[in-house]
Image (cartoon, rainbow, N blue to C red; front, side):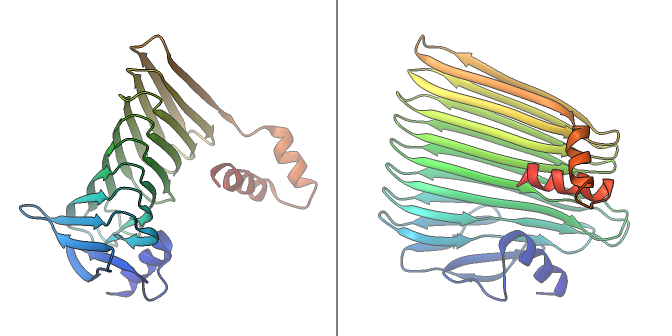
Length: 305
């Protein structure tokens, strides 16, 4: 790995020179290093670039790392990763990604992840995205996540886009069985001429299933964001989708949360709030000695925390 890859890994996956446990490090479309453990096996996907990660039933407290880096312009990386989580497992998956370009060529990464979460299993999925480099080549990251949750399982998705990604199209779909839950916490920051689109589609198929989908974002410069979400309740279930956004400079945000109730006991809620930073918040921090720019940055960091 070169220094660019190491810096990206430190940012998106807390890499400190090594990973403990199961991991696969992908750099410029190739496997840079891989390790399985007794309970978590990582193998090559047949017929397509990517991985098959298998977590044994009953595995508790382990973490698997599957970060990806693109370190130069002119690289268009595509990967298909499947995660099979055994019954009653409780694991963390870290899958950060960074793209870097110092020239005129685009750097791209498209990750298609499928989760098959077994009965009673719990998964915390953590994903950070970042674009780096001083070149004019665009940094593009387009993640796709498809999740299938078996009875009583829980998937928590903690996703962050830090900075520097010129365009991103983020698609997530989920189908939930009886008593299954999905919790999504998305945070996005765009600046300059950057564009971000988020699209959630959750189908609550099993009785007492639930979804809590929350997106927080800040649009700075001339950037534009679009947020779409759809929760479909086909049974007695609960669903909540929320988009909160802060506008700075000439940023633009479109928020379109939607609900489809196909059962009289489907309890579904949607919320959306878009606005600028309140003047009194800025003033309060300035009385503590911060400049206006420092105050704004402090508020934004707290909002996206």
